[in-house]
Structure formats: structure tokens, C-alpha cells
Figure 1 (tube, rainbow, N blue to C red):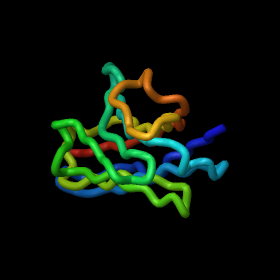
Figure 2: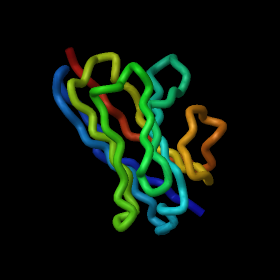
Figure 3: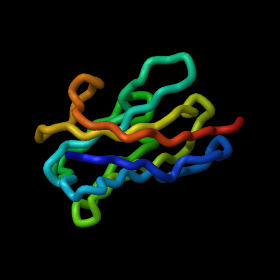
Length: 124
């Protein structure tokens, strides 16, 4: 079973950068497609992007396209979310999720395992 732990969140000024990490403590990471989601106060959890098993395909939602990069290092059982040019509207709790499939999904229901989340706050 996958156990996911996010890290790297924090407070950053608008225009700044953060890199979030998602580690699988049980070393089953390579078997899963992975995704990043976020949930702002009072809003539904939404997908940020995903990466396929092996990392060959990445997908991003339009709101972050060009500003974020998702990558994975299967040797380290870790996925990353590099976020640049951050905006106040990027403020949210960011979650990573694992899906028992080759390709990443776009909806919460497609994912089987979730981390506890890490807070990202972007000040204006």
C-alpha cells in the first residue's frame, strides 16, 4: 500500500518559486501514475497536473501551464512539483495522489491514495 508524504510548502511572495516533494515511504512508487491537486479555502479540490508511470507524459491544467513542472525520480520514490511565478491565487493546500494505472487522471475519483497535504501561501 502506498503511503504518501508531501513536503516543501511554505510562505512565498508573489513571483517567487517553491518546489514541493511527495515521497512514498513504502517504495512502491514506480508502480503508480501520480498527480498533484490543490484545495483553496472554501473551494473544491482541483487537479494541478499529473505524470504517468515512468514519467513519459505530463499534463497540466491551464491555470498553471507554463509555470509548473511535475517530475518524478523513481529511484528516490519521490515526485516533485516545481512552481514558478507564483500568484496569490495559487494559495492552497497541495496534495499528491497515486493512481493504479499507467496514465495520470484529472479527477479525484481516479486516484487511490492520498497524502495529507502541504500548505502553500503566496502573499501579494
